[in-house]
Image 1: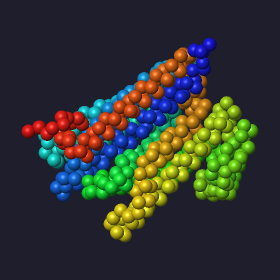
Image 2: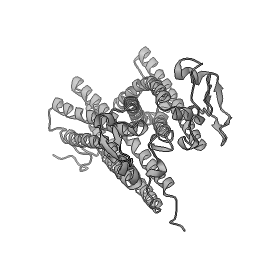
Image 3: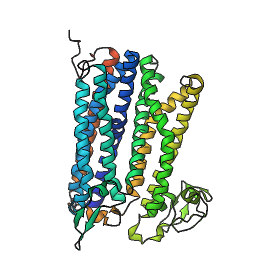
Image 4: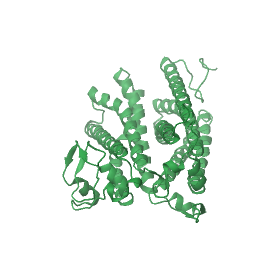
Length: 455
């Protein structure tokens, strides 16, 4: 029967798709607001009209992406109840706490974004600048709140279960500030600034490759790329700390990352490769002892293998291979972006100018999409590496999912709706930028406006 399908894979697919789309908008909401304030601060201090125009136009596009992010974020919130009713029924009292906090930050961000956009030409320059600061703060706070929920799924804490397995007591602070919260939050926030910076810079890199090398485009590139270039090496340090934390807190996920089937010492770092259905390693580049060295600063460091726990308490080998591939992508792309940032930093230090070669601009143009791939890969590591658990050591995914066999229909509907929303967003932003280039649109306070300047 066509409708009689296993709902678990479809529920997983729908959640993964909606999260994968929404996560692209998060760096814009977190980092772009900061870059707007950098441009406006430069405009105020130096009476820089290019910087003021840049901040003004950026704020209008941010309003559009914020609206789309609000829609996709709301869909995700509803999906927890619709796709994972058993999970919410059992753990909702604890899991819902970070989302309640995130809701407060969301409304704060929406309110001040409206004030900021409306305040162009209506507030004094300094008052207008300071009206944008809460946007940055609330973006950081909202992101940290959502990450707290995800961190809680990886390291659950702050609740008591009765004999029937129902949550009967919750400590809100322990739920939010769980063991994984500090490193997951810092990792995501730095990633937001890195990805947001490279995404915006890539737009201006493409424009400069097409010959638009005026001061306006150069300034837009420099502000965004500088934010990304500072974040890239910071993220490498943070990433190393996160890897050590995962090694200590979640050895099974770490084993999946490193393709370690049997517990051992002097474990090699494997780049590429995969495990077959018997746990045997095929292919890849092996660097002897490096996995143990990076884990405990000694090649004699013991790494627990996948077989250290029963088969039904660890990811399948297919999932392990997915985690390892995603890890390699994230680390590889992150290293390449750090090298690109170093290239920019060295030339700027020597000449106070951008690298002159077009290869730099080509690499900067590709960095936007590459950083998004790295971001998505990081979330694959986090989520797939936790399998088969939705709440680690407490509830499996299949026990949390809906039993509605028609969930595949909602998945197809969501894909169609998100495709239409994405197309509409691209069309709106392209229309705005075309009008700006043609000099047709007034620089009024809103994202949209009449095509003739009001007297």
